[in-house]
Structures are given as C-alpha cells and as structure tokens.
Length: 178
Image (cartoon, rainbow, N blue to C red):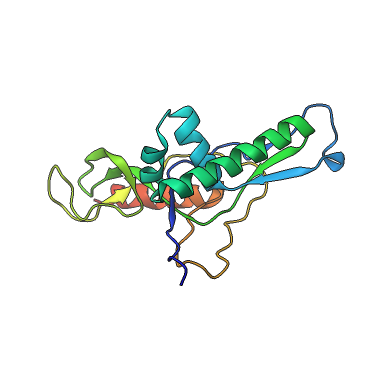
C-alpha cells in the first residue's frame, strides 16, 4: 500500500508569476510550468540557504521528497533558460503557511516555523480569535488554484489579488469593530 500523501506547506507566493525571454513573441515560445511548492523549495534552498533537512521540515515533507521537488524545479528552470522558454508559476498541492499572527486585542507576533493554522491563544494576553496576518502580494497573469488528483484533502489557499484584498478588508473591519 502506498504511503499517504503529505500536504506540502508553502509560506511565500511570488508577486510575479510569469517570465519570458525578451524580444521573442509569446506565441512562439514554449512554456514551462513551475508549481508553487517547486518555487518554495528553490526559495528555501537557494535563497534562504537552508539545508535540505531544514527545507523539508519547513514544507512538512520528507527530505527525499524535498530533494525530488528541488531537482524537478531546477531541471525546469534550466530547460527554460537554455532553450528560451517562458516560465509560468501556478498551482500545486499545498497549504499556505503563515509566519505572522494577530490576536483580537491587536498583539502581533511571528513564529519561527510557518503554520497553516493559527495558534489557539495569543502568547501575550491569552485571548482566543487569533488570525494570520496576510501580506499583500500582486499576482499577475492567470493562475489556477491547483489540482488535487484525488490524492489529498489539502485546502488550497492561493488567492488572486482581489480575493486577498477582500480578506484583508474583512480583517480590518473586524479590528475596527472592537
């Protein structure tokens, strides 16, 4: 029997989701698709400088799975660079993970390991009703929230700019009503 699928954790959504070689019309380009978990693996390993074990822990996956995701992402990026293809970042199977949280009393704090669910109580005042602090990101182009392929019950939380603004607006309304 196959091992159960572990939902991958992503804590960063890039503001730009499409790259193409300059001077070549889009219609004549091939396109490579990178999932958000592939981008997260590249970010953790190559930008943050984490070891694979640490990156795997941050994404809630095994180290061999992290290695496979990283190799897949690097192969796609290399193919796009060497063969003049566009790169489109979209979709995947993951949960958004948040680093920053705010309680109903307005206290804000960051956690070391991103979490998909907020803590039950504020560490400062022990009040319930903790919410993640959403960061504004501009998402350009079209994107899909991803495909599950029937393998997981993960909730995909990739939001387009309009949806993100609506959530932030609701949070501000809740804060103002206190």
